[in-house]
Amino acid sequence: GLGLFLYGMKLMSDGLEKAAGAKLRRILEIFTTNRLTGMLVGIFFTAVIQSSSAATVMVVSFVNAGLMNLSQAAGVILGANIGTTVTSQLVSFNLSEIAPVFLMAGVIMVLFINNPTVQKVGEVILGFGVLFMGLTSMSSAMSVLRDSPLITSYLQTLDNHFLGVLFGFIMTAILQSSSVTVSIVLLMASQGLLHLPICFFIILGCNMGSCVSALLASLSGNKGAKRAAMIHFLFNVIGSAIMFTVIFIFTKPITGALLGISGGNVARAVANTHSLMKIIEVAMLFPFMGWIVKLTYKVVP
Image 1 (cartoon, rainbow, N blue to C red):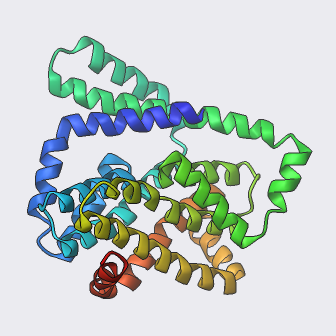
Image 2 (image 1 turned 60 degrees about the horizontal axis):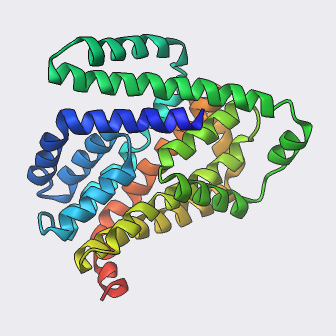
C-alpha cells in the first residue's frame, strides 16, 4: 500500500514536472522578487508538485546557481511549508472510491491518445488514481493491525510527546516526504490506532524531518545553498518548538477545538492540524525571516 502511494506521488509529480516544469521554474524566477510574492508562489508550486522537499531542494539549487537570493528563497520556503499540507487535505476527504475512475481515465489518456500534452496530463491523473489505490490498500492493512490487541494497546498508550516527535522525524527522514508520513498518521488515527493528541506531536516531528532532503542537497552546494537549506531547518525547528510548547500546555482545548471544526472526523482533524500548524508558524515567523536569514550567516559563516 505504501509502495503504491509513493509510486502514485512520484507519477503525479513527474507528470506535472513534464507538463509544466519549465513554466513553473520560470514562475519561480519571475515572481519571487519579494518575500510575500515568493511565499504565494511557494504555496502554489508545492501544492502542484505535492512535495515541499522537492520545492525546497529546487530553491537550494536556484540559490546555488545565483538565480535567487536568500531573502527570496526564504519567501518560497515559507510558502512550500503551507503548500505541502494540500496532500493530507486530499487524503482526509477519502476519495478512494473514485480512484478506479482516475486510473481508467489516466490509462486511456497515456496509452490511446497521441497528443503529448494530453499524455502528460494523463500521467498526473494516473498518479492520482494510483495514490488513492495505495491509500485504500494501506487503510485495509491498518484495519488488520487494529485486530491485534498487542499493537493497538501499544499505539493507544503512546502518549510520550518527545517519542511522538522522534517517531515523526525518523519516519519523514526515511521516506523523504512529510506529506506521506502525515497521510500515514491520518490513516492510523482514522482507524483508531492513534489518539488525536499524540498525532499533534508526530506531525511536529514530520515537519522537522522534512528538512533532511534540503540539508543533504545543500552539502555539495556553495555557502548560499547551505544557508537556504538552513533557513528551512531553522524555520521548522523554531516554529515546531513554539507549537510544541503551546500544544503541550493546551492539549485538551486544542483537541476539542480541532475536532469541533472538523465535524468530529478524526482524519479531517489530523489534516486540519497539519494545515493550521503550518499557517500559524508562517504567520508567527514571517516578520522575523530577515533575522532568520541573518542567523544563517552565523551558522554557515
